[in-house]
Length: 286
Image (cartoon, rainbow, N blue to C red):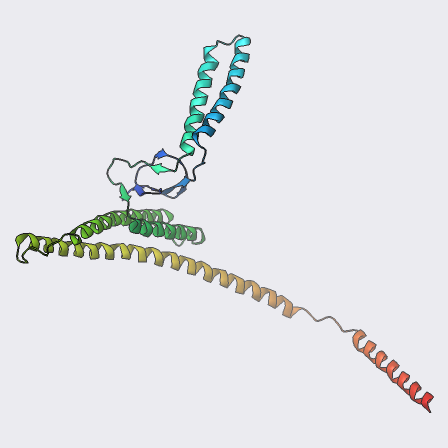
């Protein structure tokens, strides 16, 4: 089990490595949670070569002016010149890298898993998303879990899943290759046909075996996330119920304010006025 895990997903591959990842091109930001570091590509700037040349030219003119001013006050000319050249080269390199899509280098070391097939990449991408959900529940479970042990277990599960998915993508390729072999014109009892059938059967067995192992890891991750989230929701509901009980208890203990009868008195006076008006109107008619 690796002590740490670095995960990078660019447009063509997913790299799962116990070693820090480097970029061939492009830029990325790193998000670390426990022993897992996700290296997330940044969208390319879109600046073409002409725009980069124009930017470098403006910087060069500014640095030339500064170098001339420093030379005028007695600074050796080659010092500001060397610094200016280094600055322009660094800016050019950064702009060149930023203009291209991110692409990760593949560490040539043991324990590195690389996923190329989109099917396996999608499975691992989902597992990483579930692992984030699991980590978000940990702050709400103090004293219930050992954060160090939980972190190591989660990191180990992602690493193991990465290895299984590498095997599955190779099996996917092999099964497609075997399925594409035409043996219609070859006798069924040919040793070559029989050997191919045996390898097909073996590949199918390994396909089912690795699928079952990957599904067990995925179900375990899902179950862990759901249990933690359900517990936090249950605790939130319980806290809401407790607060509601306190509020309702306070309201029930309050004595109702005395009613001054202003509303009924107004209604009585209005009714009396209307009745008197009707009586006067009836008397006038007589």
